[in-house]
Image (tube, rainbow, N blue to C red; front, side):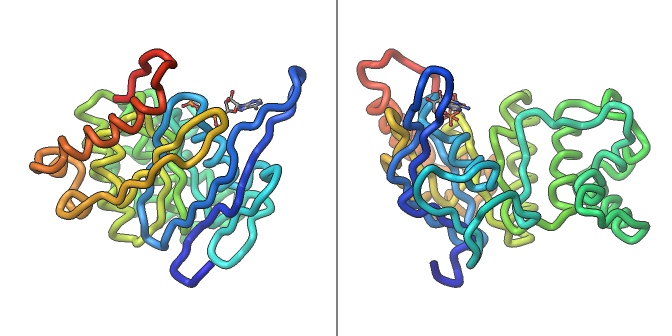
Amino acid sequence: MNDSTALALRRLSHVYVGDKGASLAVEGIDLAVAKGEFVSLVGPSGCGKTTLLSLLAGLFPPTTGEVWLGGERVFGPSPKVGYMLQQDYLFPWRTIRDNAAVGLEIQGTKSKETMKKVDGWLEELGLGGSGYRYPHELSGGMRQRVALARTLVTEPEVLLLDEPFSALDLHIKMQLEELVVETLGKLGKTAVLVTHDLSEAAAMSDRVIVLGRNPGHIRKEIAIPEPIRSTDPIEARKLPGFQTLFEELWAELDAVDEGKGGESHA
Ligand SMILES: Nc1ncnc2c1ncn2[C@@H]1O[C@H](COP(=O)(O)OP(=O)(O)OP(=O)(O)O)[C@@H](O)[C@H]1O
């Protein structure tokens, strides 16, 4: 693992053991993500995307293999890792400011000083006037912005994004994609996104990892070509090479699905 690697999975396999016996979820995963890189994981349902994200987050240890964060082996959750999920998990009885400060509270670093950072992030993410409102007063897109502020205020080095936009309307979803790419890019953060939306993966990422299943494995890595890679997600979709890239991803997933019935990829 060199200095420019933010996180890595090495020879990693994971077996879930339950009432019905053991099942091999992912096998032989080798993946390195560079500092500041934005990587997406795509693949059919059950190929192990969430399992890989959970292992990166240190939520449980892999059955075999290693997880690395910076130069350190991961043996449990780390404050260097932030999580953003499909559901925003805001507390309904707390104001937006207090929701955005939850991570600071957990870290024991909530103070007048750090609340200024909360207000700064709410402002930056277009929620400047909403700090004293409650979650039910906000739209789905605004609530996800609060979830993003809550994540960023703890200053994680790596963000793990598990379908954070999938519950939103297309227009709002694309605006949020743009906001996330722009914000993480400015801060030089590393991100791993799990998504079922191939267009989202192609528009937001530096690299897309296509997973196959039974058991989950890396099938193909696709580096997003310029100028798509460095163009914001809304404009990237309008570039001439975007459709070809989308079709390449689609064909990979179709090949995974062959003989297994059609699944929706977009
Ligand atoms: N807690 C668990 N116990 C047993 N098996 C599990 C558990 N969690 C996941 N699995 C199995 O591991 C495999 C990978 O699941 P995972 O949820 O990581 O896939 P995924 O690609 O994220 O799926 P989806 O796109 O549907 O969310 C699947 O076969 C799933 O049934």
